[in-house]
Image (cartoon, rainbow, N blue to C red):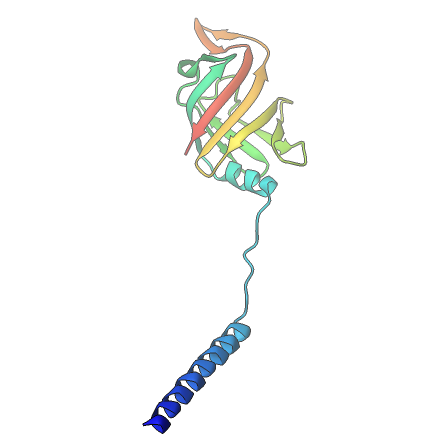
Length: 153
């Protein structure tokens, strides 16, 4: 009986050793693919151009002015943007380009600087300074002040 137990222990030990060696060989032979990590700058660009962005809320100097800009939709490509219902503050189409290394500020073709306050795959908060009130046929088109635009997908 003693010999039999020793053989079982030997087989078990050899089997475990074979399993360890086998798994080691498999893991060495498998090609490791590194998942590229994207910089914050690159994510900002990718998320921004993953359009369209639909307006959820606008404040001007801390006061809710969503009603003036309701139904605003922005769409970005790598060099241009288009707006629907952007009124004077967001012209129908224009160019844009990042002006800082972190890619958190961009300049539109009309010279207006826009700051990306936050951005995720499904939400975008932009701010800009608008210098004058605009009224057309009794309808307010824009309000002067610091605008914070909150968009969603």
